[in-house]
Image (cartoon, rainbow, N blue to C red):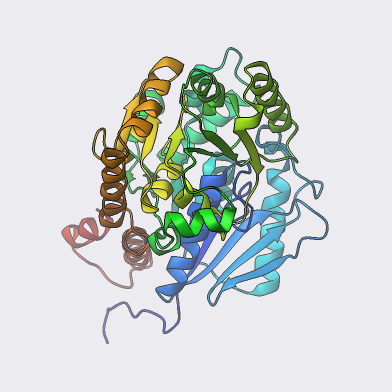
Amino acid sequence: MGNSIVAPNRRPSYALIAVDSDPTAEIGKVGGSQNVYVRELGLGLARRGCQVDIFTRREHPEQEEIVENSPGCRTIRLTAGPAKFIPRDELFEHLPAFVDAWWLFQLRSGRNYTLIHSNYWLSGWVGLRLKSHLGIPQVHTYHSVGVVKYQSMAKPPAIAVTRHLVETACLTSTDCAISTSPQEVADLRQLISDRGRVRVIPYAINTSHFGSIARTVAREHLKIATDEKLILYVGRFDRRKGIETLIKACATLTKPFRLYLVGGDRTSEEECQERQRIQDLVTELGLEDATVFVGQVAQTELPFYYAAANVCVIPSDYEPFGLVALEAMAAGTPVIASIVGGLKYTVIHRETGMLIPPNEPTALAAAITEVFDDPWQWEAYGQAGRQWVRDNFSAAEIVAEIHSLYQSLTLAESVQSACDTQKLNPSLKLVSRFIE
């Protein structure tokens, strides 16, 4: 066979690192969109014949160590620090223990991975440590960029400098960084580094999961009147999510409505405080009878809420991508979103919904009023949004693109390894073709 490279007759094994984002977590917890991203990627890769292990941190003593998500896709919960919820900004000190636990699991299981895919900067630090010892490719997805996130804060957290250093290393020292929107690429280049390889690959949506329920069926399931005007918010209770702007906008509406707030992590002290602040504002503005605090919901229930809504509002001050917008549009529900971050690319103004300035209750109220006054036009936006998501953000196509990236990196690594050991001597043109 000469100097040819022979691929082993086995499924490729990939290690997805998601320290702070258990893919089995309920919607509405910290890192909700990241949880969905990692889960859908793992399941999709398994359907393509890969073996995927998703490594996350154990947050409760009774959690199982290994969860079989599907044939070929597992969640592995590692012990790193106390088995309880720890806020993201306090997790860094536990990362060395996470790395140690990873090595112990790998030694015990005997599984050899061909590539690491880290998610968020905490996992990026873990991935860089593993990459340096294993010598295998690392892909990194940012999910958010610290320096952008902290711009809207009066006082950034103490961890901000450490995060910036790690995010710089993730761009310059991994084999490829994935950005979920062109805006994030611009942020990385302007605020992090002009070095490193970046690919734009957006989040993916399981369109069949969100797009198969009629509004009448959804409302019957949730016991919501068919003629009720339903405004939906899905996400965490976080000041940057703009819920206060939404509440103030609703207080000026003249037509009857119901506002459903889905999400909120009761294990997070910060979220509990923000939820209480929003509840106090709801009371102050006299909206108690019109507002429903739904709390966390299971993935199986979430499509019913999207399908039942007349409009889904995403009033964020900062949003790296905006997965909620895709989920709503996949369900045929039009979207009103802030014109920030990735939302500028996921929502098409006056085609799948409306983009408005953040922190402007008057503009948001006017947009919601338009939904109520011109339902036929907004129904058309919803249907256009459903098609837009199917054409551009389907899980099968996005996972295939990421898998193709994995394959190109592992092949380039094999070629380089063979060159280093003088097993073959390809031309420079051939090597660059694989690496590029």
